[in-house]
Picture 1 (cartoon, rainbow, N blue to C red):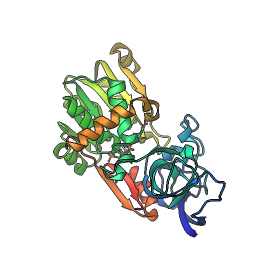
Picture 2 (picture 1 turned 30 degrees about the vertical axis):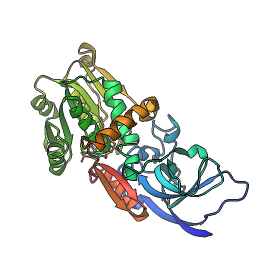
Picture 3 (picture 1 turned 135 degrees about the vertical axis):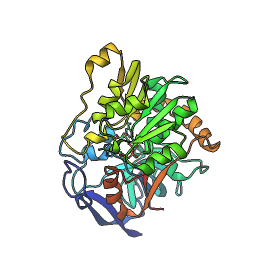
Picture 4 (picture 1 turned 90 degrees about the vertical axis):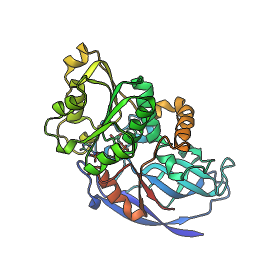
Length: 344
Ligand SMILES: NC(=O)c1ccc[n+]([C@@H]2O[C@H](COP(=O)([O-])OP(=O)(O)OC[C@H]3O[C@@H](n4cnc5c(N)ncnc54)[C@H](OP(=O)(O)O)[C@@H]3O)[C@@H](O)[C@H]2O)c1
């Protein structure tokens, strides 16, 4: 049987803030059966993860490209790959059966033809909504867990600052920090997000960074004695202000620098004298480097969700048509929590 498979491409490289017109929805004839000797797998995609790092792959050049296997350049007109959850429709590979639920690196499409190597794992448990495996129980959760616990080594009672705190990663970091007994302040780009952090996610305090004119004094106001741990999702001026406000032996995990993805404008230039004299440990990381703690992360996080101690904030859009606006929206602060496209 053959179906019409719709897939999303970029029309050309995107050098600054993305626009919906940069994308195109294409259609191709797609066979739902395999050749007898094939060991491929055909997957019907159910949930597509929408992530900021993809913009760096869409540029004609970006220093992230080629640093790790999932960061290869995206070629205009060709399929885009990313984290996707799907259901096996047909399999020539004995390890995968029809109707298995799989998480992997598949295409932004309704159907994907994949190799065994594209599949990260089977999803055996349906205890939680499937989409959670792209967010809180997937790479976003692992980023939060590894960056916060493994890199920052936080202690109960320490003062923690999280940027993009109402986003997929930030919302989980703040909740982990509260569960450990830290004092947590988050920043986000709207009053609605600030209210969510304080009223639903249990942050001790939160502020809208877009309403602040001097980030140094803002952080001084929220952390009069200084910051022990800064979980950075944005880079730029917020990183500079955080470094200025760090305590001696403070730790900074640089998870991402989204404020620097959309332009060649201001890059963070933190005060290096502060870094030396306050002996601040600043470290960038990728979640993929921490697969060794995945089981630990998954067990603890599932338990927190099961017992209602950790809330997953999701922002779902539906259908292939919604991919461009969902992706563009990440860079305008439209999403609240994990952005996922549902094709289910
Ligand atoms: N290291 C890793 O392995 C890893 C894994 C996943 C994600 N990341 C990184 O972590 C960060 C957060 O990713 P996410 O998936 O959780 O996305 P997200 O926070 O759910 O969504 C993006 C958010 O970024 C904020 N934003 C957009 N443009 C901004 C700007 N110019 N300045 C400041 N904030 C801006 C917006 O929130 P506001 O309304 O609050 O502005 C927007 O909602 C990104 O930098 C991403 O690249 C790293």
